[in-house]
Amino acid sequence: MKKQSKTEKIKVKKVSDTKPKTQNPKLKPVELKQLVCLLGDESLVKEYSAAFQEKGIAVQELKNLASLKTSAKKITAAFELTLDSTEQKKKNLEALNEVLPDHVPIISTSITETILSQSHQSKHKHRFIGIAAFPTLLSNSLIELAPSIHTSKEIADTVKALFDSIKKETAMVQDGVGMVMPRILCQIINEALFTVQNDVATPKEIDDAMKYGTNYPHGPIAWGEMIGFANVVAVLDALYHSHHEERYKVAPVLRQMAIAGVFWKVKD
Image (cartoon, rainbow, N blue to C red; front, side):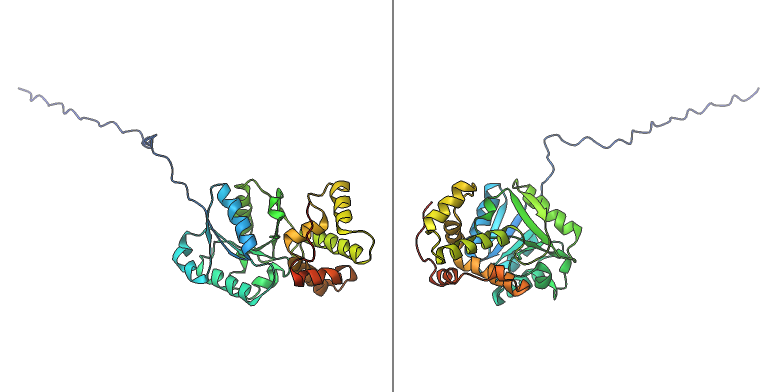
């Protein structure tokens, strides 16, 4: 008798699809929240703080540098908003550069000193970018930024995205003293006070003529008072020191008003 061969039945396992498992629709991706730190001139810090918080961006107003280390890893952008070039501003920039991770942008007011000059001794030059932070100008829809020759595209793009998130347009301008709007505005204020000094017109007449004749939001003298006459003088002095041109010489009465704080009260 022939032996019957047993047929072996092989069970083949079906290969499961390689599609990833569907995520739980209830789970949402975690969004990284922005934390902006601000230090410098109090008026500018308050102005920028309000603008960011209004759009839901967390803000840390640094009263001193000691509090910087505790939150350094959470900070996504840092602003140094001291208008004039001072030793304290230099210390602030050094501390920010030392403590913050090197991918975090440092945005510094660069109206009286270029961002290149501010960052030339820093080991992370790529992260610095200048801004035309000047009292009252944040109400405009456009923000002026000034990258140096060292500023990386990634840093510039990050800062632009930050301002996009608060509905502000940005313009990359030349890294020069005064930048654009502060330079023009301070010259207008200065010329208005030369006009007063030469008895051509009264402050109110000048303000009314410029406000209603050119549709400025404020008259130049009233605007100068809102900005702070000392700030106007600081910009003009920096421009004169940089260019040595007569048009940047400060009107004597404007310098007096900068020293006094206010010379007269001008109302819109």
